[in-house]
Amino acid sequence: MRNATLIIPALFLALFAAPGCKEDPVPNEPGEFGQPCIIGEADNTPDGCASGLSCYFGYCEELCASPSDCQPVDGSEHTCAAGVCHIICNTDNPCPENLDTTLVCATNNRCKAEGAESS
Image 1 (cartoon, rainbow, N blue to C red):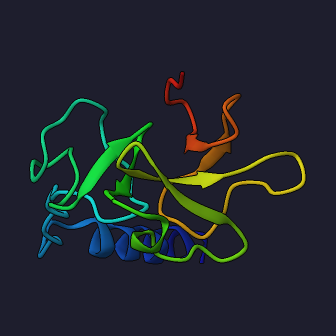
Image 2 (image 1 turned 180 degrees about the horizontal axis):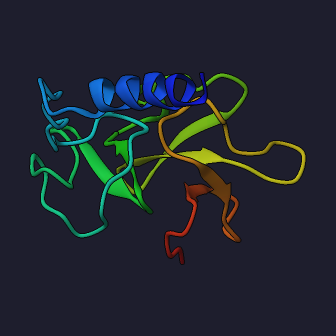
């Protein structure tokens, strides 16, 4: 009886661990708004941002000419400065948590990707 209780789980483990169809890895494509990126990567490159976006302190942010060019971000002020949209934050208004990048409030009261350098 004890051998059966050891053999059956071992068979299930072998069945599920056996090589078979594997999912294709997710392609590394240029990031969309709010997705992580590597600062300094060129636009439309795998670790950069899609066209019309800029890698701003570790996440893809929109380029702009006026605040109306910046899409709304629930519960946050999203404004245009120096040609790039910025999510404004402070102790009363933390960075949004609904983007694909974990954001933290930098000393300049603008959101940045967690771990990214800021000025």
